[in-house]
Amino acid sequence: METATAKVTRRQLLGAAAATSLGATSGCVQRLRSIANRQSSETVSLSVTAPPADSDRLATLIARHLVSNLEAAGIDTTLNILPQSELLREVLLNRNFDLFVTRLPPVVDPQEYTALLHSVFAGEQGWQNPYGVTDMVTDDYLGAQQRTAGDSRRRNARKLTRHITRTQPFTTVGFPDEIRAVRTDQFTGWETGIASPISYLALERASEIPPEEDLSLQLSITDSRLSQNLNPLSVEYRQPEPFTDLLYDPLVRRFGETFVPWLASEWAFEQDGQQSTITASLRPGLIWHDGISITAQDVAFTFRFLSDTSLDELEQQVPAPFYRAWTSIVAEARAIDDETVRLTVETPSEAVARQVLLTPIFPAHIWREHTSVADLSGFESSENITEALVFANEDAIGSGPVAVGDVVADEEVVFQPFEEHFLTRGEGDLTEIPERFAGGFPFDELRFRVTPSNETAVELVVQGDLDGTAMDVDPREEIIERIAGASEVSMVVERSPSAYHIGYNTSTRPFSNPYFCRLVARLVDKQYIVDNIFRGYGAPASNPFDGTQWSPNDLGFDSADPVVPFLGTDGEVDAEQARAEFRKQGFEFDEDGTLLLR
Image 1 (cartoon, rainbow, N blue to C red):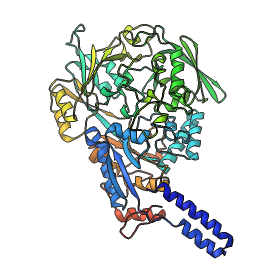
Image 2 (image 1 turned 135 degrees about the horizontal axis):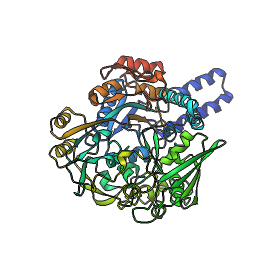
Image 3 (image 1 turned 90 degrees about the vertical axis):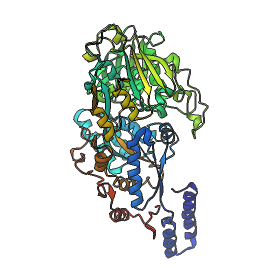
Image 4 (image 1 turned 180 degrees about the horizontal axis):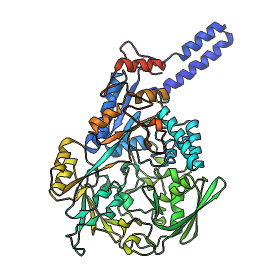
């Protein structure tokens, strides 16, 4: 990669050419300009960052596939394996990477592209534009989808998706199937889906289990980070579907395409020019896990706090690394009284505005104590990191259906049903909440046990020591066969909303050139990855909205990527074809066939 010194040298050379031109002939000027703009002889050297195989084997194998094909195409590449927490810290907080392979957070609405790609967020940390994209066309499309509704919004979102697939700030690889092993001798109802932790509440006791018998729902997790940190804002510790979702309730939950009242009993939308207002009423009698009443002031605090976790104490805002797509469009959050909050949202579209209600609500009396600058190592710019973003939050206080019980680092986490939760009490109007969540909880405790591997997790389920695997397991043949061959064990398969993707640091060369990003994307055989790495459990994709209303019909993946088709066959790149495509875009190779930095 080019260093800062090399960039300064090139600018100095251009300046020297301009100064010399005062006394030079036009021919000499042209020669100087030619020298100034000649490509550097420095070869391209890239590092692909990925998690280790014991935490995400699929990501590791995708990274190895990419490294192999980059090398075959003449690009010097190394594989940088980092533990999950360190990887996310380096990529999302320190922005120290060339390419990285992870799963995207679920992207279910075009507004979520805003946090991922809008140039205004390029300087923030977390999942706010980690690729460093600064593109006015992208910004314009993002604004257009945010300001419109219905068919007009759908058209604008499709234009946005088309532009992203053309410029490739990141490459969507495919959606894996999430595979879980579960037992049916104590709990039933797994077939309704358990990809979201909130779904545990919808399970049922097996008919032979008496309702008065104490029953523990015991699940495995192969990632110990949950036992080390319960802070929903700590980006290094959270998975795409965080288990902390059980601890912190939003005003509204989304089940499929349906928005269901949760902490809010009802809400009203009103358009006002290019803005809108949402007035939400809280359910009566809500309390936090520590017994303090939940009020509209907590809701107003949450939106202010997530927009700036320093609460204006620092010169620069320090927003939370999650929920930015929604909090960034809330112009004002004001408590009208203890049970009523009014949100002013910078969009006239109800489809966009109502999604701010999905933001989890935080207790003001807990989080306003964590606004100071964090004192920590491992961060390149810690002066703009508040304590709220990094403290472990071991005794998490929320309003969710479960509360924290015992936590033993690297061993287990125990949650207890929150008896004062509105679902447990069964009070108020619950008619809009899906029926499967009514009638109390099926367990007396929820226990997550840390296991060292997928094999161990599945074996504990087979032996009856655990009820299921909370995290999806690797689709290796021996694991699938072990699940299939065990009595009273079933396999739950769900298409994940979180796609595997390859992210590029577009703020640095050579990824600042979108043609380079496109060419790298063409070194990824998505169908091969799904067939051989996912072992058929998943689907390749051209973009995060592939197959939905937000993606143009002609962009659907159909045996090949329609925009960046693979330059090879059966996972192996055609080196000569790849080099030819790079040359078409003006890239050059040295005598050894290694790509030179433009």
